[in-house]
Length: 356
Image 1 (cartoon, rainbow, N blue to C red):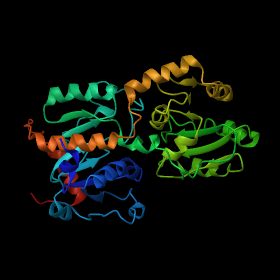
Image 2: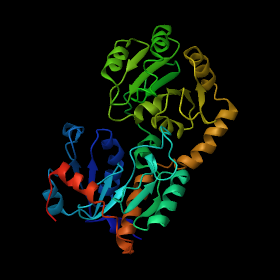
Image 3: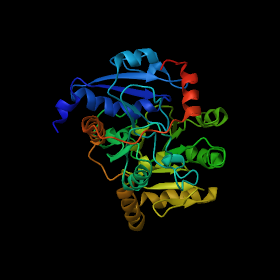
Image 4: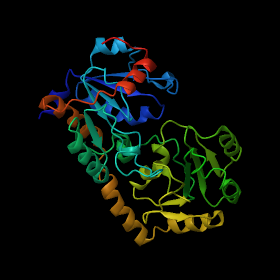
């Protein structure tokens, strides 16, 4: 297939409902524009801020405008998408499987909601599960592409705002917002001590849904040793850090694919590619150990990354675009999608769209 020809003059819609989705879909947008296609954005709901759109990015403001523009494909980092949009619907995921809950069968990260025509999977450990579901249901296809969000992670950049002349090791602390899983309250005093020690340069970044109380408390720790960061794009932070301290959040998988060590605190599933501790007084020693990059840990990380996301070429967005174009050109007949009457009614009600 001539991929430039396949993309040229085609229309691709980016469908988002959270601010972090901008960074997920922009690498695909770049691939589309580089290959001669057109891009529009549709922002669904009040959790996504339209001011984050860049000056060259064009927005569609209603379902009527989407139908009038008539995209060939819509990309969405979600489990759900309106089935009444024109064109094929392509799932690209909002993160890795963070193992926050049991995911046997079609649950959580592996949920099948009867919305998508194509799932672009991140690596073998997701491809196997979705391929099995595709064979079972017959109403969607699967292509292993890698996760386009990570493309900039593997690209050299000269304008990373978190680069520093500080020669101390950089510790990045990230946390989920779940009260049951977050390290924020449990490690507050320990992290406060890090901010006064000055042993490391500490960067702190929390999930956007983190409780305001803990955001405020950690912001107050900011000094020459600790910086609290609020951003819709975590990739530059991942690039500059030497080690991560986390709990049970998919951001740690994004860090691991760089083959860098992660210390976890009471993580839900303490796999061998993680250094997990369960007591606050164990955290500091674990970080020191991680910074030595012990050979057994690094070998476990290497094996894990080959299953999670084996691509480090920064070309996953192009593979996603190629997979969508191949689907469009194949004219392959799939089984009809399930009616999902209640789910589709709720989606129409949410978007206030009742045309057929």
